[in-house]
Amino acid sequence: MDVLGRLGGENPFLGQRVLACFANSVEKLAILGQAREIVNFDVRPLDEVDFQMDIQNMDAMPDNSFDSFIALHVLNHVKDDQAALREILRVLRPGGKALLTVPYRAGERTVEMANMTEHYGAENLEKYGVGSYRRYGLGDVMERFANQFDLTVLEGRDTVSATHMKVFVLTKMIG
Image 1 (cartoon, rainbow, N blue to C red):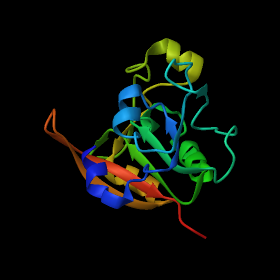
Image 2 (cartoon, rainbow, N blue to C red):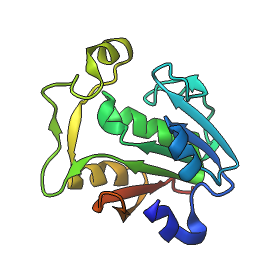
Image 3 (spheres, rainbow, N blue to C red):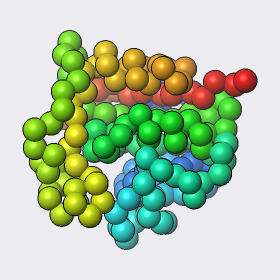
């Protein structure tokens, strides 16, 4: 929310058609409340989503069909984060923006997780492929994003916990 407030007139969701990779009811109200349309999905069959779809393969969505995309702390839970980034790029219209967050460690390299069931459990890993696959290094994740998008990195502050976190705004280049 802090970052959106500082984007001012450049709020990537204001009046936009948004594809959301599991935005819960609070996020839909607080972050996406000014969107024109929200299409909400998850790979798991959850009550709060419009339909079930894998971020790594969003064939149900046409090319260039969304103005904006949001995924908060998702990419570390998918097996092929590069496939997910390619799909985000494909479904965004030229000039479209994706707002992403991932857990990261500054000054460290990305590491594969030893226990992929750490966060979502063995059942979700087996049924849906949802696991804890990696812990990103800040430099690595910024490089991954910048390889396919114009990257803007903003520092957000959580007023409740008084912690800071980088929020990544990825823009699909025009032309």
